[in-house]
Length: 115
Length: 109
Image (cartoon, rainbow over all chains, first blue to last red; front, side, top):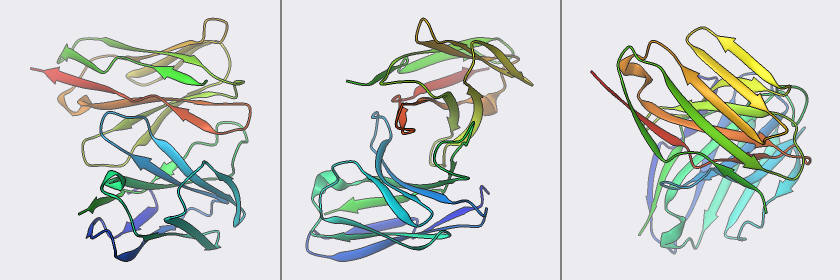
């Protein structure tokens, strides 16, 4: 247990569906992240929130929409996804964005399959 | 562009020593991280280097040479539970983590 939880763990959705991924951290951290992990590829940073404010959006398609209502919760809203969006979506948190060895703690991920 | 290179897969024997290399080219440098990821699980933090030299933590050690853009993770007294992917990541000048694709380590009895 890393102190970061994600739900659901598995999700199958059609291209016309709307769904949301949820992440919660119990570590008192100020920064939260969404990553996409595809087989044999590096982790792709999607969004960064620091003190609830979005600080990075790495050219992510608008069909992915993040929401951070407070520093403990992070959502990723999904709509009209494509089959190539099938991947493991990881949430992470850290004490802050860049101080010292501020390592990131990861949740178990949501395995998303788009049909 | 920014790039992190590490071998795709390595095999080692239980009880032996293995060294996993990582080379990087990034826009600035604010530290290098190693993570371990077992199949189907979340990555977990192993080590952090920001200055040149060797950091030792039990059976695991990590080395950094900033002038060469090079790091390695050294695993000693290998155990079967060390079978996992090992991810190298560099924090760039914008404090973003740039990740390698990971090295899958297979331990054989």
